[in-house]
Length: 229
Image 1 (cartoon, one colour):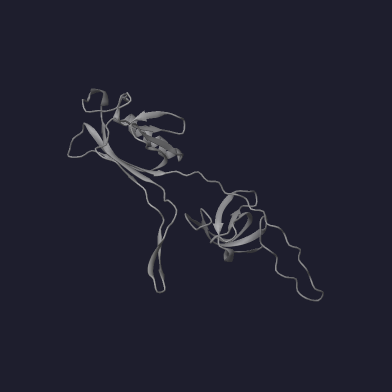
Image 2: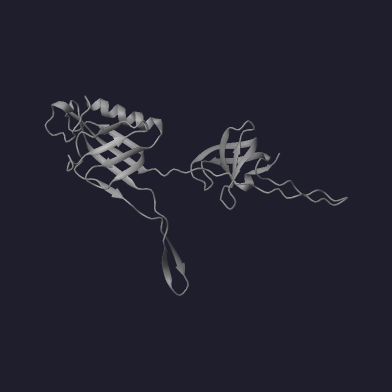
């Protein structure tokens, strides 16, 4: 049916379900990472930023036995509310993006399951109420940046300059690890750990990505957190 309004979720294995009951309302949140600065003799100005990740929150219900209820809106139904819960939980635990498509609209969002809450209200055991929060997923890859090694000049009877730290350097790390070079995602703290620099992001707040000597990824650290081994 071309005019059928349905809310469809597709997982990483290309399995699709339609939510049994359409939500009463849905909001797609779009915003930019704008910042304000003060300029002399002009005052506060707005610096336009890039688009932030979209957020969508779905609130509705899951009938315990959907095939016997008159108020369901889906064209095809799973056998029980628990089947829907298991499908969503399985997709969440896989930590892979899913896609939300709302038919009769232009909404088609590749996203991750930010949170999934469900339970029963008002002592009624015929259905679960739930809130499914989705956040837009943007694929990205870390790019290896080659560092040109400069020859080290020595002067007779003078101490050699300190070793340069760059791609492939063996270093001692003392500091907190992060998920990316901008400092997002706090990780463990390294203490006198012997590591190898596997990636370099010049100009970043945390420019060095370190790994174990056998290649196991650890995280991004500040320049001041590393020294030559």
